[in-house]
Amino acid sequence: MRFLKSPLISLLLIVIISASCSDYQKVLKSNDYTRKYELAKELYVKKDYQKA
Image (tube, rainbow, N blue to C red; front, side, top):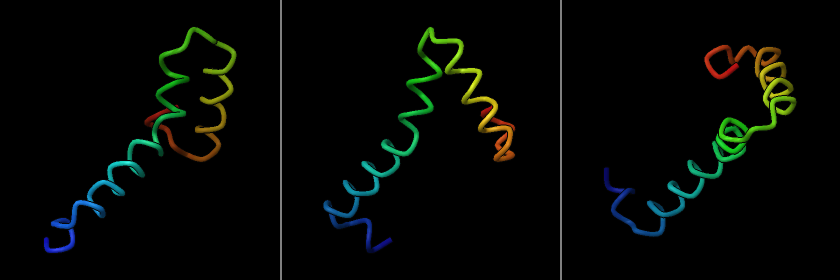
């Protein structure tokens, strides 16, 4: 893949991927069970059953 040879594009992709899952991971690791329950309900409504 030619476009991945550019360090700037590779770095940008890594930042986007890591930023997109950070909120979910923070809630998952926390001890706030109310927030976990609320997130699970939100994900269930969005039909993201794997994370809910």
